[in-house]
View 1 (cartoon, helix red, strand yellow):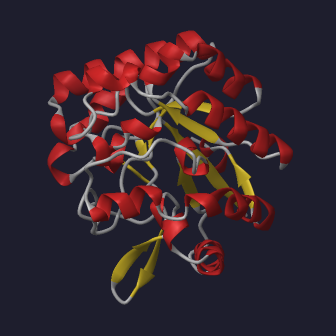
View 2: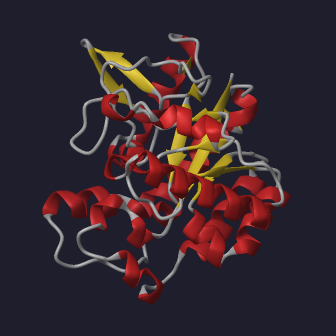
View 3: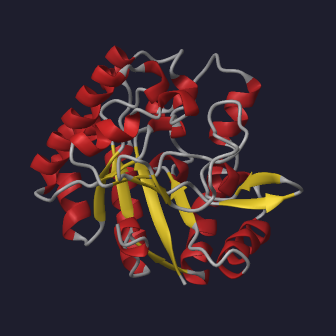
Length: 273
């Protein structure tokens, strides 16, 4: 089975955990590392002959159009992560439309290809903003991967379907992968959980989703997760510090094992969107 390899293309200072510490108007003054980290990641995928989907911020594409062109030239799918990582829960329909239309235009201009996929920052689709799908459709998107069917303090729709489904608008929603354990959904798609779980357990989770559920697994990560030398943000809580910096030194080695242990492809090919 071919699983979906995805990357949320954002820099270390753009994560939701730092929203209260680094204002958006200060982003350009930060040490930008997304371009160099992405080059390393693209080289790694090329080494293993893996193609993936890159959900890219419009903010990043504006500043690094050559990076966007390389994503496309290397055979990966270019998709949208919105413009500046504003969570959908902080926007009304008009603001959301402006955000995703702006990001789509920037990405398409830089990459020269149609952008059909979208992933909300911090998986911020919820029951009370289901209007998002009609807006995505009207802006020319075909699918979303923005729902986490889990309980989490930052995101999640725990009762959402665990497998792909179509909204009434026609948009295909592809929720991140979970494992059903004891009546609850356990996250097993990547991100911080790829750094938290022992690799052997994470590998078992992916294999279980494939064999037991008969479904591809979605893996997601960020470029900053292969960068243990990134600047350290001060004044953050213990929970935030652990979530962001935990096991960064182990990620590249684990990622190499993951790319070797399973077959991987683009979202639009794995799910025939």
